[in-house]
Image 1 (cartoon, helix red, strand yellow):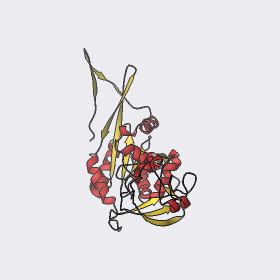
Image 2 (cartoon, rainbow, N blue to C red):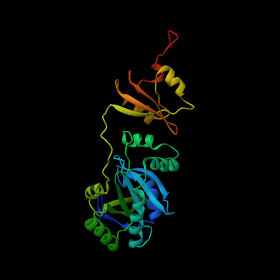
Image 3 (cartoon, rainbow, N blue to C red):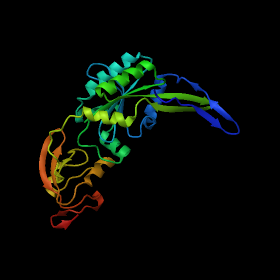
Length: 286
């Protein structure tokens, strides 16, 4: 059973703060969209109402720092069988999402690149591989015994990485509070999610070779890059920051998006701001 939460106001006198059912799961969804850290500090929202290929909509889809996906489904007055079955159905679709598809979903929902948002949230570059595993979270304002039984059955007998979290809503004068309780220990669910991972057949990285995307267009020109021997990035903190991972002696494979690989090079100077870069042109340094 989830832990029952009570709140008491302690001033000159001790007074219990009364619980009331949160107005609706829709209000709860708005709260979570505004600040997903209420659910977990380790999640970045990819999008809400994400449409699957089967015409259904996932309430919220998020990603953690490891690049794993989290399906967040609000109960919204549905029966336990409906909400759990729907969430498992979504998981069957999510497990096959490719790296590029995840980037596209984020961009469509947020009108910006996932790479930059990820770096801003986690202060780290987006992992080379996404969606190694996934988790399911059922979110509700109250947790009924039937939902609890189903989730425990799936988790204990089939190692399905599923959990439930419910929020209690309290009011005191003009102040409002919500509390959070998990049905299962999130660390245990995290362990079960590793069972959904597919063993990678990819060779281990040699820590010497890098792929560099070069956006040939408005801000930089591939012809100039070849002529003067440089690669560049910008128009976002993440893009500039990732160039700092290149070290003198590293080998780069340069790729123009939607065109393919266009060149191979070797790093002879560390990254620096463009205002500090000097090229030798016709015997003159500029």
